[in-house]
Structures are given as C-alpha cells and as structure tokens.
Length: 187
Image (cartoon, rainbow, N blue to C red; front, side, top):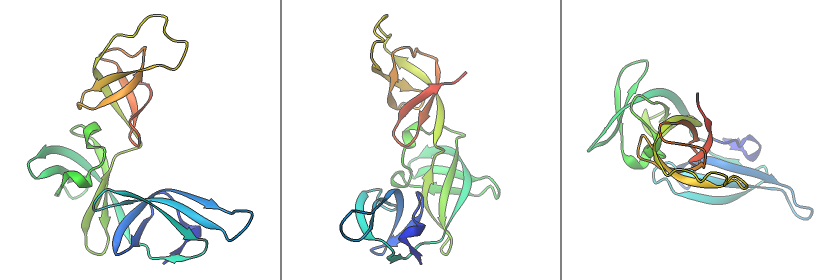
C-alpha cells in the first residue's frame, strides 16, 4: 500500500482491479477545501489513458513490478519479439503492449515491465529519446526562419514526425519518445 505522497511517474497501481501506470500527477492545495492529487493513468492492458483525482493521504494498492532490459529483435504475425539481455530468453508482446512501436528499430534497447508475482510481461518502454535517420522530407524554403516553423519528415522506421526547416534527408536526429517531438541533430 502507498499513499498519495508516494506518487511518482512510472508508479504502477492496482486500480479498479486493473493495472495502471501513472504518467502525470499534480498535488493541488486549493485555498478552500482539502488538498487532492490530480493524475493521468494509462491502463497497461488496453493502453487507454484516464484522468482521476485522489484525496490527499488516501491509501492505494500498488503492484510490484520489475524493469528488465531487453533488446528488440523483430516483428512478426504474433507481435514484437524481444530478447532478455541476461538470460537470452525471448518474449513476444502484442502490439497493444508496445506503445510508440513505430519509432523502434531492430536492435533497440527497451525496458520491459514484468509483474513480479506472476512473471507476466506488462508493457515495453522505450528510452526517453531515440536517434533515427531522416529518410524523406521536403526541402525547406530559404529565409523562412522568422518563426519556429516545422515540416513533416519520415524517419528510417517509417514514422512521420515534425522537424525544423533546416533538417535534410540523411540527417540523424534525436526524437523524444513521449510525444514524437524533435529534440536536436545528432553528430
């Protein structure tokens, strides 16, 4: 059991008999009335995000999960195949359990959350940023840099993201995995 003071991003709760991971939280202390915690939680099984408000100090049931490093091998008809880096065992996860799979390339290091009591894989998490090569983008117009203008680009995994005008084809860029946003050029 944990209280709302223990909330942090990545904490897994057993909420309504389903596992949810906290993606955002905010402690709110209004001028009038009791304090509360506003959260955004993602259902691990379905991937749906819900908003919920907990009263401050309320006890919630947490699930014991372990983060294990894996390597993405390939995708087939059954799902995404990963290999445990320490035991070399392979795990297959369906597409619903792999968010942001379209920016994941073969050989990518990921973290798989495993339910500690049942040894059941829950979800795969990419690192906070990934480095990918731009395969297609329209050329930017010269002199159109007065504002932070973005243009669409396709990266090597096939995902489409928005990049600044100065990015060209075959440029290696860093992408933030949480919202597909451009971070910087990689040398």
